[in-house]
Image (tube, rainbow, N blue to C red):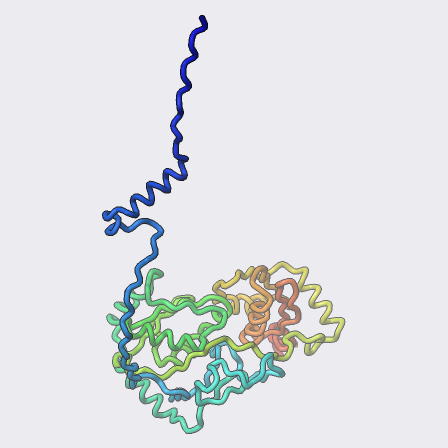
Length: 359
């Protein structure tokens, strides 16, 4: 006989995984223990907003300067004091004169395009007397030596860098800010202004009211004075931006004064092919350039200065300063090379004198 087949086993109907998770989730939600739980992704409970209390408006302080600002300084305000020649008038402007760099309505002086004119009723005598009072008695040698030893080193925190724009207007405010906590300020001069350090020292003393107590090549120490009080510092309105430089007459003429066109062309070619007297670097120290050019003109008629990587604008500024300091005649600016001619008068002075008694 055939064996009986085993009865088929009934399989359990398993709940799918998704339905099982959903069932577990509903059971947890229905339990009373879930009330104190804070599951993830639950909406944040909004805190009741308290009504804002009305704050008192700020009381305006009496120390705030009212506009327009009024300054008692007796000189005209310029962007740069040491790098502008007041004897040379500009022939044009690159921006309208009505745009004052001090901002609209912030200064009671009229802006002319290059300067903010000082009022005529300023008493210069009273200003000099006040400056002498602040400086007080001259410093002794021991006091000067102590200040120099404290502030002359390169790691001095009270330092101002003077660059190609020279003594600027906003630098005066920086000086007084340093003088709040220090008796002297270290000034490091670089670039074009170092050609005439006497001019830099003059404007620093005149415009700030301080005194130069140390000078070594391009390093200066400016002393504030014995009776200096930071609370009585002068009002110095700040320039908000640097104004565009005006347009001045050309420095180099097509034909140099005292020469013909052919002679000028010959001088330029001779200068370009001559060895350079000096090689100037960008933002370097040019203290000895004037003396070397004067010495070279005793034997040479044309001198070339190699100003590679100095910049076209700085080359022209160097040529203008050398024209006034040496004096000489710039005849060419090309490929950052400066060609200087000593001029007719220098040529006559360099000739040996003839003794009239000798036949």
